[in-house]
Length: 332
Image (cartoon, rainbow, N blue to C red; front, side, top):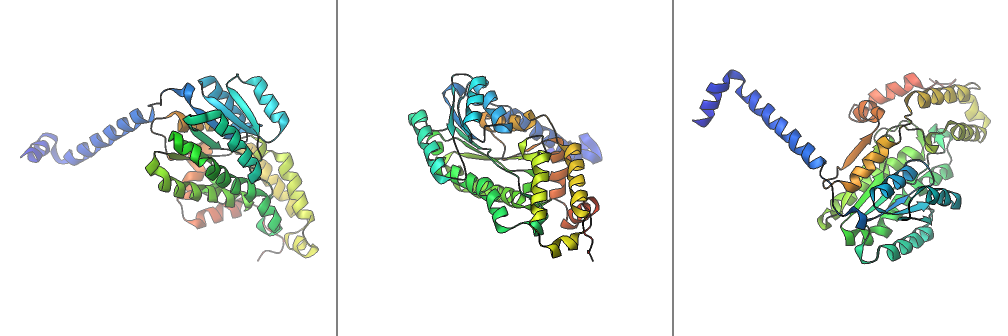
């Protein structure tokens, strides 16, 4: 009777109106939950890796101003000194090389003394490297290892070492992946490592959610940082080219390297965003929201290009890259 009354009242489009109403209510509830924040921020400790420059450096300053007790892992003494000069007294630094387990252990012991019985509210695994990057055939095994030991082993090492402190606080693990962890657009260890971060984070989230720990993945698009700097990229491409045998070089042709570098310049200049706050705002939300999201896509290129591409058939990306990248001289 109630269903018939609704149908008579709304006419033939009754179910459309009902479904639309439920959808709007769901969106409103989601927005309300998404904007709820945690309390007592000033009592919470957050550890951030890769703070010499870029996203990590900017995030530390933002969290420090917000009132968090910030522990910043820096690779160099200069990076640590520069950050301390620009931050408040609640920010402390420690030297950290995420590719070295002894360094990770020392950073954990330092953090354990700082947080005491409160535990560690959040860890942001931000440290990473992108080079060498280029055609897969140009890489040696050690070229892959140099990236994987930072981007993949470093994230796993940091997370497993710091997990007891995070578990004590029922805190957050924020892992920085990339849109190139959704779409493999170039050779080298970078895409491989970011796919690994995605899968590690998914497995970890499902395993430890019973203990009140949230695992969040940040998927930035292309931004102007040291990772996307053109000069180091071009130097690495020249190094990779020079280590190839004459036979392999001949298969690509004398002009291939210059054409490849030109394409990289065009892509980086066209889509790299200079507004790093689009990424650090996602990190901040993951740490401060009462209901953090599982994934954060940062940047318009991530939302409008890379994430949609990740749901498309593989041949779409294959054709797109063929149209953009130069063709080897002896291709068939």
